[in-house]
Image 1 (cartoon, rainbow, N blue to C red):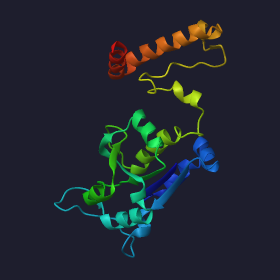
Image 2 (cartoon, rainbow, N blue to C red):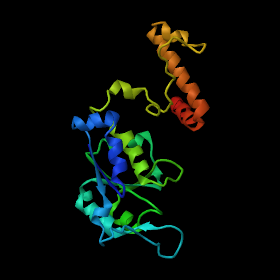
Image 3 (cartoon, one colour):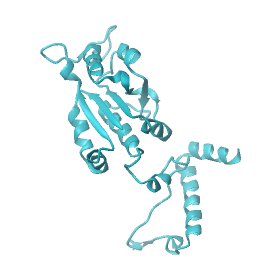
Image 4 (cartoon, helix red, strand yellow):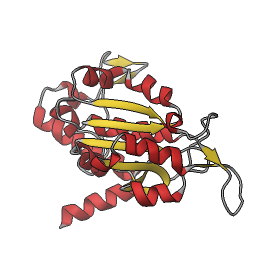
Length: 229
């Protein structure tokens, strides 16, 4: 997978992708992440990329000229182009799996009050929101999207590690334990020490159901509905 991020602050993207599993995936050539500075395509000597909104109002809006030039330079028409925005469709694990099948993504990061609507209308394939809240940085939202997607690309993480994660089967993940066997007076559930794999699977499934019902009743309701179908 190739991912190109258009941003006013490429150092935010570059610092993150040089870390942890993502850096290893990049080193192996499984994933590429490129940060493109929109200011490099500004049309004046001050490298201006924002201006006051027509019609008045607070804040500034990112101008269409530099963004359009940057999108054209990276040939976004040959990729799925995403604008991360609190006005977008909710980002889900299912959407992450869908995006992981794309060969190339272009992600546009907004700042201030966002980007000129004409860019969205002419260059963006879809708007995606990482949650029902507002961030000051589109870069943070872009990194959430990239992190959720790249780990699903073949060759990044073993399939066994992904199967039992939260949201993969409609339930939240079961609790985990490791050494020591007793910590601050709290022990590990006996079933996990039994070596009885069938009982362990049953225990873990039950914990998933209980946790989902407690933490995400909306997901629990959807899960139970599917079980009855």
